[in-house]
Length: 257
Image (tube, rainbow, N blue to C red; front, top):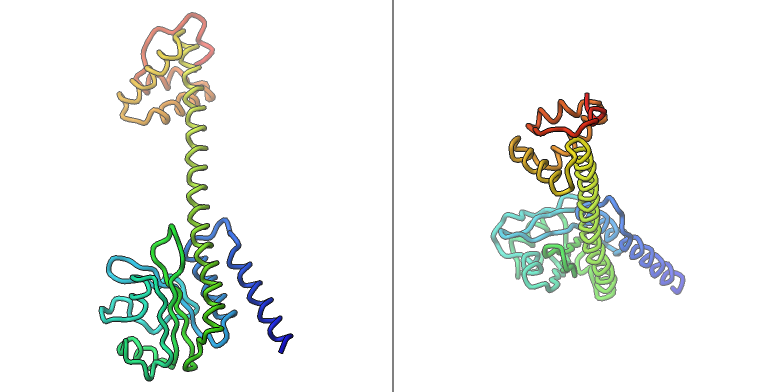
């Protein structure tokens, strides 16, 4: 008995460790799918698991181990909507006997699912979500199983939040990287203009801004064109293409083709 208990504890610890891992390229759907698979592996008697996410008209099934016998668009009462709305767990001991949600229970019973447990996921940044477990055995999700599922659900909520934090952070890094690259390109273009027209920093930026307005193009794109043209020895042609006029300083011919 002790060995079985130790194996259960070790198995649960392994599942929790897996659920807590932050995978860089995973999105919410991928994490939800992993979560559903972990539930089936870790919870005795669980035959099918899925993740439901709320929206204005009800909920969507975003991840599952097998297609659940549900109609998310149905407007009749069901425990999943109650879990998503009130963030409280719901349990059906036997779908053949439960009368609280008759249509919901009958859909499950017809497919051979005798018990159901729905739990809210404790997320902060994700829309309201619930984990739903089905079993072909009645009264399968007892108090011991319930405690195990609560632990996994807690880690799943953290994982979903972490995924959103990670992706938000990556977006910020991408934006910052783009901004830095843009500033560098604009600075190069300003340097070329300053050398070509013998003007100062403010005047060179004014030239870029005027060219942007005249050609109806973003300032960073005009700057990139000028830098690329200089590398091809076509700087003067690029000036004409962007309607940039003025008197070049003496000796600036080396800039252009």
